[in-house]
Length: 229
Image 1 (cartoon, rainbow, N blue to C red):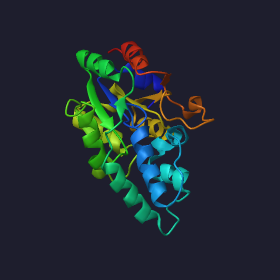
Image 2 (image 1 turned 60 degrees about the vertical axis):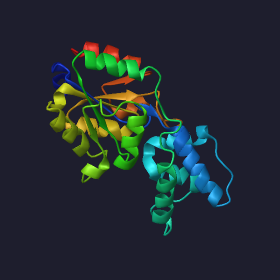
Image 3 (image 1 turned 120 degrees about the vertical axis):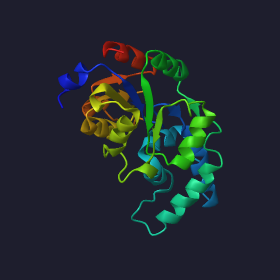
Image 4 (image 1 turned 30 degrees about the horizontal axis):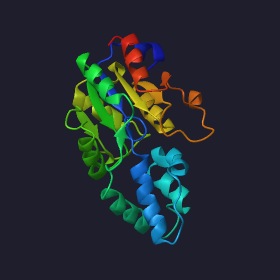
């Protein structure tokens, strides 16, 4: 679907990535990674060093923190240990990005449905969203547990639209990683880059092909207004 066709439909739903878009979760993830490093006799890393890799999921974070990947024989065990540590404190220091609570309230006041589409497993996403007072107020939560393929595959975005009862063309997907843009475009939604999120150093988000880019959650309200909401 063309950009013009997507932007012609009145907006009915806002779909949000979780880590780096809706919530700042880097501190809790860094704490779990540093505990894992400590267990292996390694010095801790600063949150700022790990922050750009959060939106790349466990694979990206473990590559940064431990220089380990799926090609390594010990990867599955290390990943599960990381998950076990993170489960103990996944919502201890996480916060909504500044202003997002008000943004969500105003979007709802305009009659928009709110969905969350994340590559974060449900066992972490649900406790986190409850701690942040976003769940169960959000209208749907799509995690990899429900899907055959995670983002950048569009399956999760399409499932969110189905559950919300809206057409993809009447939706916008907001994320801070290139795969969010890829998934949204493939599904037929508008796409927005959360440039305040976990963007890797040197990454030029204007090359991702999104419909728009915002520097703060408040920027989403102006976009939605321009798109008929």
